[in-house]
Amino acid sequence: MDVVSDAIGAVRIGRPSCTRVGISGSWCTRLAPYDGAGFHVVLKGGCRLSPDGPGPSLLLGTGDAVLLPHGAGHTIADRHTEPDAAAPERAVPFEQWQATRPPDHPESHTDEVRMLCGKYRLDRARMHPLMAELPQVVHLPHQVGGHPALRSAIDLLGRELGERQPGACVAVPSLLDLLLVYMIRAWMSEDTTGTWPTVLGDPVTAAALRALHSDPAAPWTNDRLAAEVGVSRPTLARRFAVLVGRPPMNYLTWWRLTLAATLLRDTPDSLATIARQVGYGTPYALSHAFNREFHTTPGRYRAAPSRPD
Image 1 (spheres, one colour):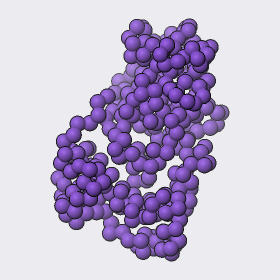
Image 2 (cartoon, helix red, strand yellow):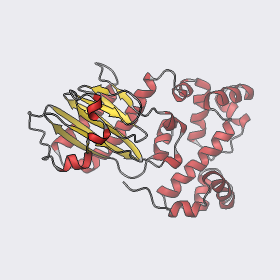
Image 3 (tube, rainbow, N blue to C red):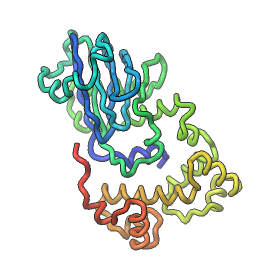
Image 4 (cartoon, helix red, strand yellow):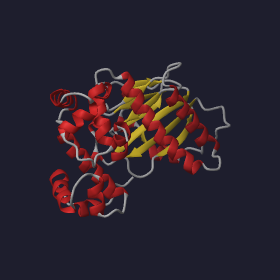
């Protein structure tokens, strides 16, 4: 596994959802804060997105994608609506707004705006620092020749939602997963000041992270990891701590426990099996470390219900 895949896999729960919306005229709707991540993709026309609280509104055009990785509340409105007129208290809640609208028919050409609106369920107790670093709003404007994989995923997703072909129940969630990966990749390629784009752009630290994520159960030591990466132990320790913000073995302990939490929620494996998978010699050792990190026992963590949609 690589760091980005693991960072997404650690927090994602349940199935993502998405709807295709066709709109004309004057409109304004609000999406309340959500314990997950939301996104919008403009397939046709344009609109205005205004996040709750401080922060400028965004004018979105055809092909633009927006990711709200921390579930920030926001309004979306026709592009002629002034930001003050799109205040949260004046906007119609999205679910109520959708309930009063006719079903979207892709063969209709009368809609001025056509969008994809969706969300991902996330468990923030397992948030990887890469995901935590994402800004409240990630705006990815359409650029000719820019992020071709993202553009392809958007095109395929829009077609699947519009045509409702056999197999769509399998295709759509898979395409939504791809869309999330491609949006995060696009952010990383454009953010030249962020910590984690810098971390994964550093050959020594990136190689060390790949090794740890590829085999977290291995009996890693600082010496063994430095030898794997091909640098001295002091060089690895210095670069890793400066860029990641914690020493390599400290990061490994945190990641092992985060991975154990994911396995407890996503698999029926016994605690002994999970302990072996994440590098702990006994279930007791894992349970003690898990309780120190998450302030609950593995059994209680597994029994706790996932957050509702």
